Amino acid sequence: MPRKPLISGNWKMNLNHFEAIQLIQKLGYALDGDDLDACDVSVHPPFTDLRSVQTVLDADRIPIALGAQHCHFETSGAFTGEVSPAMLAKLDVTYVIAGHSERRQIFGETDEMVNAKVRAILTNGMTPIMACGETLDEREAGEAEARVQSQVVAGLAQISADQVANLVIAYEPIWAIGTGVTASSTDAEAMCAHVRRVVGDNWGGDAAQSVRIQYGGSVKGGNAAELMSQPDVDGALVGGASLDADEFARIVQHRLL
Ligand code: PEP
Image (cartoon, rainbow, N blue to C red):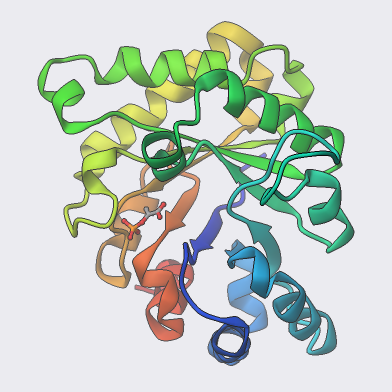
């Protein structure tokens, strides 16, 4: 069965809840039923915007999935400032990003923490988007494949093949995030194919065939069609361009470009 592309907009720490409502309404107008049949689409606003965006999606019956950018792995307790997966599930969140490179680099998230989050997201009935990717130094030293392999194996440890089959892995080379530099479609395909091989070696062929692998790193309307035409690229995790409804809509509509 062909893997349906998933295009996810990571709004990062941008937009208050009034601005978030405007963006999701604009996006709802920009996309039609055919667009949302061809692709799954998720938006990942900051925590403070989730309830407002959920209300608009519900009221206007827009089939865009609500996502979160991060969560803690415990259900409740003395973790000041954190938000639990159970709280997100209650808000109808479908997808949660775990291990974004900004969380790993700025907030010190380790592979073990990412794995705990991935498991907690699954336990709460949501779908993890587990991010992985190498730095420029690692790429130049020829270590990119090994780095990504270790992140995938550690991040998905103790997860069953059936669960891996249904989750999402985002390959995001760190040197391409927010820089305007996109990996060539050949490089993006090579690494997404590598991730699929790693899944096959560790969780079997069925999981490898089903798992969705996104590319992320300066995806725009102008490069989306080329990237998404690669056989192992099953969608995109989009940062900056997801803050502009028309630009994000062009990425979702890549089949028309
Ligand atoms: C991201 O935030 O995951 C990302 C890929 O950002 P950008 O599209 O801005 O490079």
